[in-house]
Length: 277
Image (cartoon, rainbow, N blue to C red; front, side):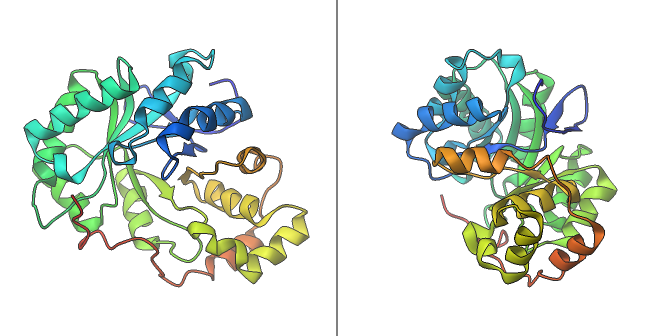
């Protein structure tokens, strides 16, 4: 990578850019142009999923960007209805076809769906895909400690990444501590709490103190915690604003103030309960 974004090493020879661009809820027809804008702003890490139905747009924008494939880090995810060893392998092939890539940098199980009890079997499929070189790194999303402990115990393979809901109102310190102890990279989805964090008075105060926007303060907080963070926007000015977070730092006192905002307030569904097909 040649831009200013720090990278976090993953098992093997890969590293993941700490700031990425998410495309959740970006309409398929808008995805190519939105991703092109993100790449022009400097992003090199793109996060999509089969469930988003916009993998093809991510692939199109990547191929027509003028950038080398090796300069991009692309994540996609296995959807709930495709869990199981053979279905997961077929779903991966579909994602690879939609993206029109030879490999995927990071492939994640999107949700554990414990009610179906297929996530260990699915994890075995991802291990095979990594061994074949088609997925360079593998991980999970929305897994809690019990889910992580089980796949590690039953397969011996630790996920490279766990992508979880994480924002100032839902900081998940116990899960992040588990990640640290096991060498799992924490990646934050909904890093701004779907905008709720932007209306938080403490965050507004810190933004005023630093001459930054509330979004920049929250994204910088994630970076300093060591999280990978994937903000999403379809507005060119905000895409650029969200990328401009490396020219300032939050001191210890401001980090403490932000830590006090944790209310354990989840926006998305609980991983033990979510089973949407």
